[in-house]
Image: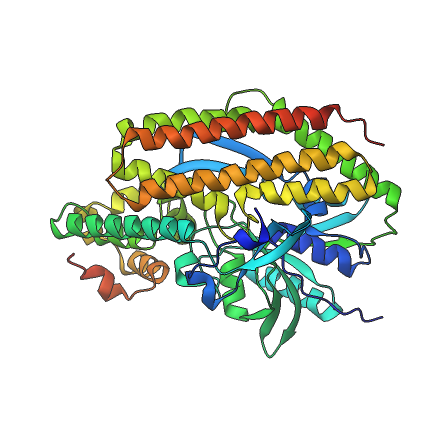
Length: 338
Length: 132
């Protein structure tokens, strides 16, 4: 039986791959926010000392690969994964899957991704896309962040699958197998589990750099940057935060709008009025993240023309966000969901 | 964020796609909408590129002054650090650090230069004769 693959655009690449593949395998009610929530995608982490692309190392989401794994696991879907040290073997494996007509998820680096505009080609190795066919030595590609499908040549495919550096993909491909019927009860359980796990990760992990405490940590760091790094570099640091938070792939407001949408959709499976109210709080948090980006933008647009007061404004907004999210996750962790 | 507040600013992504965003519709329910871009993050990206260019320019000057080998410049130009360059060339980070010395660079074999040149997507001559 030939099933037809349908391209779905998503805010975030990994969510998008997961949603498309699950729908292809018959889980037809799946949406991006549900995957994101069941897979416990929302997070916050600020690694001290380490720099990424000469800026602060902040993350608004969990580790690459985690969302898909967790979402599938809680729905009883088995995911097969393969990595390769040999480029030829990696190509043969992919070609075999294409021949079998199986769409597969593929981890790639964007530095050599031909259809990305040059301005966006950084050494970032955790982008995900779906290969759903092949015509005349070109792979047919469904990249979830794009409006429509595209193609990649065989040679470019090798390059992007074997990009090097942190999180190097090593030809990583993955796909669900033997997907059974997913019942409403399973979805309910997966939603509840996702919410509980996220609450623990945002509130209870030890240390002051993760979860809502981590947001406060960033807030305190921002106050130090101008003196420590000088006005120009401090501005660049803020620019990096804004890019991690708002660039393509986040759905806006550092994934917070996506999470608010999840809680709204969760209410359809696990009816509870509190879910809608808490969803509102994440919308508020997302709006404040956007506001902080506007304030940070004022600073880095002026390059070296900034004052410490401007940094205080940003730090204050982050403190507010930390408090809102802390209260919201506390409410979530206390919810009796059935 | 409300649907009607979603920014539609010009952005380098235009040649590839508009991006999907999660916004609230008139009834306060979540929906998705496409955005062309947002000037706040366009400025952040522009700034990041200015910084990359400044770094490459600094590296070029260091090579011109004879303080470091051309590898230093091309490494910055390609936004690489030692981990990345080590991944692409197969050389140890420690080895690459040595190759940044002009004296060591001069005695590098054609084979090693070739590896660097292909990673930097230039010819061996371009690499060898880069004077900054």
